[in-house]
Length: 356
Image 1 (cartoon, rainbow, N blue to C red):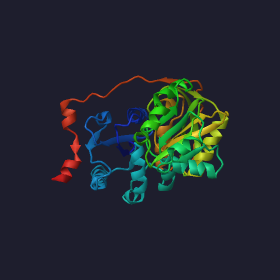
Image 2 (image 1 turned 30 degrees about the vertical axis):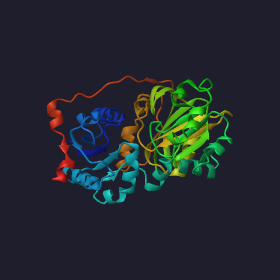
Image 3 (image 1 turned 90 degrees about the vertical axis):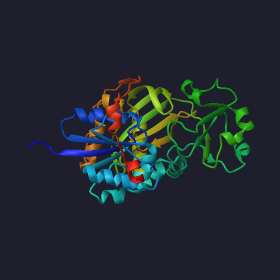
Image 4 (image 1 turned 180 degrees about the vertical axis):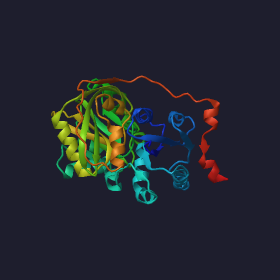
């Protein structure tokens, strides 16, 4: 008797992690998967890697949730796996009503996502727990110049919410003192002072600059219990994606990540980002409460994170730490999905169906 098929729905399949996830699901032998994908753009590469794909409305539109329910019912979905950062907010908030339909939603509960997806909330929690907090402030209207006086240069401006370095600036008089990979965020101090409204809003945070090495930590957990982590040292990146990265062993970062997962209560796969401060301490920059774009490196090093996350969704609660191949490295190159006219015309346009 063959194993039953798991119908799994992925949202925002233009996400850079999706091709890797599909590859993992296709090659394993524990389960069989029927892979369904959604996105708002017909150009999203992931739409052409699935068994069936849908074009949907933006999640900010009122009919989006009805489209998701329609897909769930039509395809008898067992697991819903949200991929993008913004998806985590929506699906954690709607997790309970979706799971009433018998679907497991692979997202953390609302409170952990509320903390993880907002840097100010996260920094406040870390300060409360005395976990190597950054020096930071929310910028009151008209108070930027006064706050600048409290911060050694360079300093950082960043949005409370956002992915891929959006709205992040490293402000200094010159870029000469910045870490090479940080120079892409450089903003001259004179330019900031000349037109502060271009760079600062009511959701902007000012924080200390961390000049040391950067580490990205992929974790597997459930409701605050961390099963294992893979630590990647990032040496080159573009936006939020690593271009060059190497798996390293570091007990201090691993214990720090475990503490943060515990106090936030995060589940499934999450990505924690740290840098080394001027004083030599690891400090948290942000949490991405989702599968990271460089999950391929963690998989290649020996962590079967995608399938372990699926097993979590299926009820398994015990996992052994994988024997990681320390020193495994990743060098990004660009590939793509090919879509024929027939492929593109086969997309189901749910947003148009609802509009009729």
